[in-house]
Image (cartoon, rainbow, N blue to C red; front, side, top):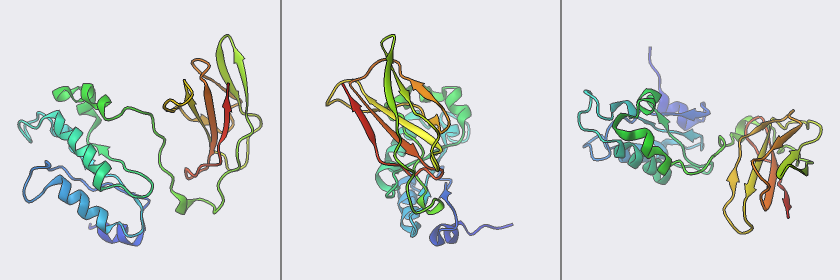
Length: 212
């Protein structure tokens, strides 16, 4: 059994590729940074490239002394050198190390995961047109904003709701609501709300905004 993953990526035959880059950044000659950069150079069709990090090797017999900070550094590398026009990403191998908080990894990860993000779009899988703009309305019930989506819309797989607590402040992404959901209740009544439809391959519609 063999797999020519380099050709698959170069020809755009895969939607995403996760090369197993399990070495440390300072390893020579297998530097995580150098390998991530090399794979990015092979991504001629602009597919998703999400390097795999060896989170399971933190404080392990396989790689004695590997600190949790190594994984955080590698995440930063993927954001700087392995991103394409759709953004960056990475995979942990495996979640068991995060669950066990090996080397304090779980406690440290919030420093690099500060905001919720939705999966990036894969436009080569979707129709040429983005989904239609949503037609929501806003109600306030018991001091909480409720986004009423209305009837389901064609090609709208999900509803994306973002909120800004104060005008001019940062936006926060809430969880995706299914395209057939009638409404979504927010934790409070923020100053601004933005709603978009998300297509089956992650393509976003135009934004419909509300402010008070």
